[in-house]
Length: 239
Ligand code: ADP
Ligand code: MG
Image 1 (cartoon, rainbow, N blue to C red):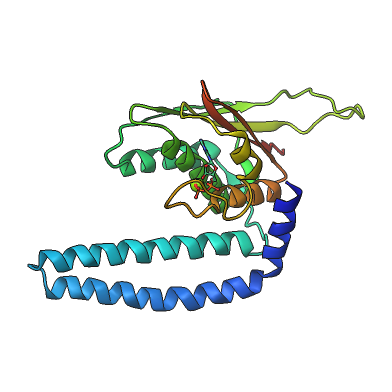
Image 2 (cartoon, rainbow, N blue to C red):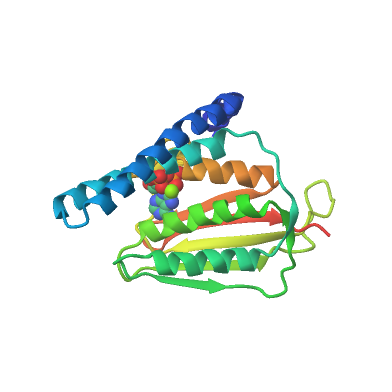
């Protein structure tokens, strides 16, 4: 964890540089994408060409994702705070991911505690946080797998050791019945660029950790080869 934090510090020191670089990469990338799309319109009947163009566009999209994620990780944390309805954020993601699931049939379910009020947070960042976790869960399960998104309020009256009342928290669980996470992966998965996926960036969880800490929350993971994995995000409920 310490090395992950040190690495995140170093990345955020490079924040300005990364923002500039991201801009410099995204512009020409937009040019490549536009040209590829024109090429497709120009030769609509050439099946081979269309296949090459499809690959080009997919790879352009991949570079875009890497640049976006690097930017999210490196940019200095300035939260745009507003009252955020977590359930709306979560159900939008669930709906979107249900429609996006190509081929693999996965059950994506939501169980919300309706008594949870809006929280103070950055809606765009919270969306990114839960999207990353839900995507990881969907990628972890096999066909027929189940991903459950649950909200609950953590005990109002918990006391810290100093005897002060702990801030009321909301907990969001993202549970999957995938293969679980090996000890070696558990140790490294929050480190930027650590991935076990052939097409992964390894930036998702590093970004999640950054967003959670910017919101003064906590993230924990509970994983088991039999039951699967539960990521829990705890966020303060402030009046
Ligand atoms: P990426 O998804 O691009 O690999 P992440 O930072 O999102 O990067 O995740 C890092 C690694 O953590 C993944 O490659 C995977 O090995 C592991 N991981 C994350 N979530 C889960 C999950 N729900 N089940 C199993 N493994 C997971
Ligand atoms: Mg991921």
